[in-house]
Length: 379
Ligand SMILES: Cc1ncc(COP(=O)(O)O)c(C=O)c1O
Image (cartoon, rainbow, N blue to C red; front, side, top):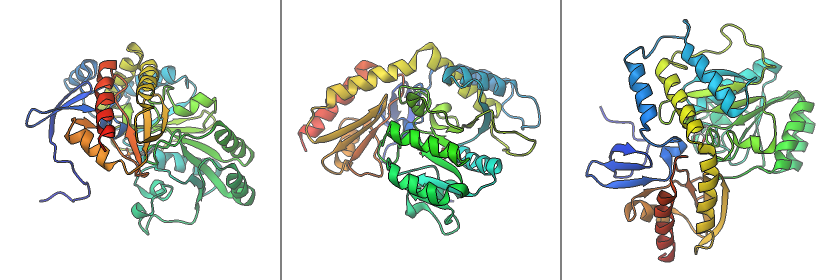
């Protein structure tokens, strides 16, 4: 059997990883400044993470959600404390798309409405309803498309108000990323988010903050929208939550009523996934990683801001978009093949997306900074 060929692949085969580095099958070392699409939060193979998972494997790896699982409770408690959202409730699932599907569904159960407002540049996943609220027609199949999903322009209050005025009574939820990642590190203005919140309250619409990429400390806040003091009704998370172990979460405001069977999953919240997520939170707290994200992000921006060919830098914490005066493909390729550094791109071809682990050290950022300087001076 062959693999279904949907991924354009680099010709690199990593077989070992530690901290911010990877090694391939030829023994070549690479610096990871992308975390495999924003997934690596506490660094590869952190010893606490490894030990917790190994210990759990010797106990029990899985049983279904029909029995008690104290690890889920421990995870919810630790997540509540570190995020400051103690009064929210947690539903565990397996991925970012699944978290967003459940968020849309829960909103609709809650207010009985069926339209969803989303924004230009958005990415919320590739499954049924969430791909339909993702702004990329190439990945929306006819089976997903539905006219109930309404697109509004990013950071545009006028259009938002106009849509609500006409259809507000039918809009079940607004889904918005804390910071758009795939869209090219697009940061919402405080005025925009405040207006969304105001309209949601006025029209009994549920505000869903997709923090799958911008969450878990990456922005220098636990969730990016917390910087603005906005209270979301539902927050979704995945990626950095398990540092590579598949897990997603839906954080649900206490005003939502749970009932047996309302949501569900076979694998979500399994023992291994919970232990991975608990280890991530332990390390984030013990190593003060949110502060490190703030400091290292600011350091990188300051060091690179005057490099040639950089038009703008959009950044919060360690979520960094470097907009060049050209397509970033050549720069990204040179960073990877000439300097052995992984970086990312985005739907905006000019934007290089930088998402290192939150454990990144100053000397590791210097490797990236020096390489970027060389590459930009030679194009
Ligand atoms: C903001 C955002 N939401 C949702 C998703 C989907 O997550 P997953 O690939 O885990 O389904 C992504 C993935 O890139 C994302 O960036």
